[in-house]
Length: 463
Image (cartoon, helix red, strand yellow):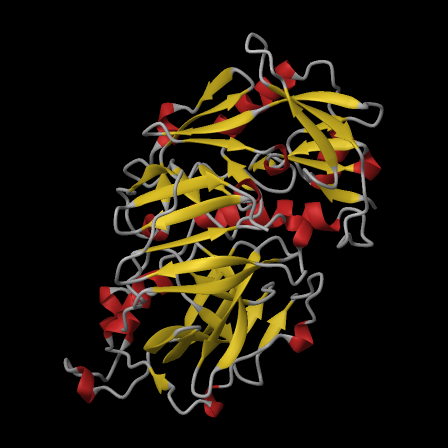
């Protein structure tokens, strides 16, 4: 199959309409090329990321309640695009350091690694991932490891203030308790992991962070790598290191599994230079708190398609008392997810503005996507521009590659936004209404300013 992400340089020629009176459009000249990482299975990549996005959306909308040192200055960690639909970083733990690749995830908080020589991962066959060769951390080789006690504050980071109920035979003082912190079980959409929390050194490029809490997982399902949790809960890497901010620029997925990388920048205590031209919108708190308080919520007002503003239903713009509604930013989701009430008006507007192009129901069914157009006989197509409008006036103008996918063997151009009403999964009317995935963040500088409680973004070429 010729399965291609839209690329400004290699896949298509784009020209913006210069007429101020006409609807803003982008002219697409189709020129399919073989994606360097295409699978022999015709639908494997898109169907995989569609199903995993919907399953992850189900998890993020229905998360289960979970049954140091400070970074000085700035550090950089290489960030790579992966064909499983995410991005990975490598972190080093222990003494001497053991380097483990991990999925970079702003939608969860625990950092966990595949652990011990007996680590087992079920259904973990992904492109360019051999389950038998998943790199594991071996605690017995580290001289600085330690077990986390049941009454340790770090244990409470995972299990909450009621963790004492999980610590039978322990007195009121931590020193009198020899019982380790209980095992954890965490779900990630289609995947899961289980293990024990431990602490050890985290060896960053320019600093060693002592007594860092992370999970030692011995059993996982459908996990290509461990996970570096960058969410808002106490156990996350940003909270443990007391970061002032962190930022990244995601490479296009056309660089999947290649050595090319961008940087994840960690900013701790001390002065740091700002980035010019960054637009900001404030983070929003979810009044329901747990289990949604680990997500980065922002206030998305509307989405502009061409010159038509598609306003989000008021009830979806910010999270309500029960935690429903609102928009979160998630590096671990590939495609953007929208509840049906937000997705259907968006699709209707695309269909109205592209009325001359027929829909491709066969492609929609095969790929599990909610909107595909039949472009098999088209040479030049005018596509409406798309802008995400946030509270405070910040606007994110999306490049074409960030909202359309071209599948040449099907002759289809598909919206890279999914809904629970798509064929790959059920609609879930709870939790976040919109989950901004990493395809929509490609070639954007994205900044999580934890000190000022705001999200920043700026379009730029990441590599």
